Image (cartoon, rainbow, N blue to C red):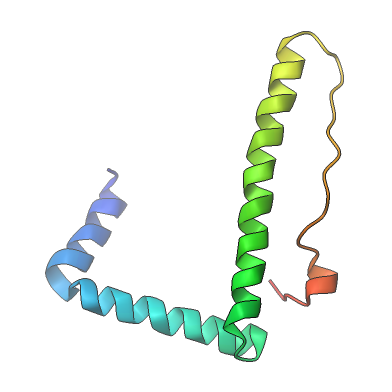
Length: 93
């Protein structure tokens, strides 16, 4: 574990405690939902799930493309659907 991770663990476990860290997480979640999603937690979670799905697909595609290139293909591509479109989702970040 890097020194930054160790510092966080010390802050969480020894200085402030788990309850304090949970409260900060809840306040951060609520602030994001209120600021960007007009208080709609479900909309925020939908966007986060879509981003997580895209991230997972991106990792899979990277592996597939690398395998194809390693087998000697000079050019390789994969077509992907767009799940999270900032213009359509209205997400400012």
